Image (spheres, one colour):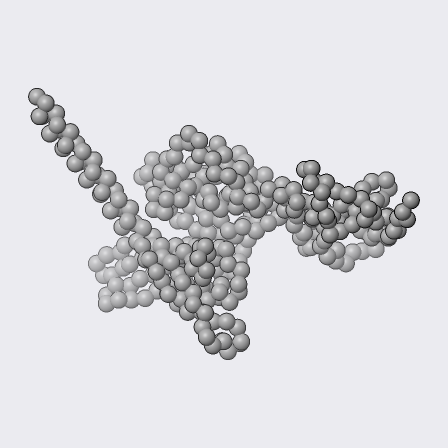
Length: 321
């Protein structure tokens, strides 16, 4: 019989590959265990090779929690501050799109905003909004954007959905969401920023985007002043391209107009480094769209088409008499 390798283990046996930190002596417990590299592991009928060896302790077999969890599609998250391991069965993969016989009501959002939330130990960007008054939808409900919810691994199949008129995005009301949430998402404070830059992790690019938002917050042309309030910036599939959604107020001595604007931001890396040696970027805009004007034109187009169809039908019926 092959000789087992004896090891001493301090702390949890079901390793998570996270730093254990410093513990008080009365928390630690030393045990004898054995490494079993000769053990084979088969997952769903297929042999797998784990980086960490199998451990046998007290006649029980222990495998790496992080490795097995990831292979099963789960997310294993370690929070050192609370010494807590979060195990979430489906936290990262987006849920499949299933839209079988679901009626979609429409609404125009009011006061949309984006925040970072903690859900089951992981952090996610989330767009939230209220419904505008006069649309037939209760305006005191909070709506969650479906694309963000799916990235959180929440099964939304069968939940009542609503289509936002300006952006075309699908939302789900909070009462519907509560049917599937395992816990309420907890907002995460992020300094003084009141919007989220989603999908970007490069600190230099994030800084460039934040600077752009700050520099373009207000301007003036002739007697008209413009104030731009950021809602969300999302990284797109094209490299260094982002979608920027903001709320613009145009005002003069004669009028005040509030519209939602969507535009693309394109980052271009500067040839020379910044003073601190980091990468710098210039930002250009592309495809500036006034969403309120666009919706108004679409409504007018549909009304004109409906009017034309009625007139043609009246002519057809008159010809048959």
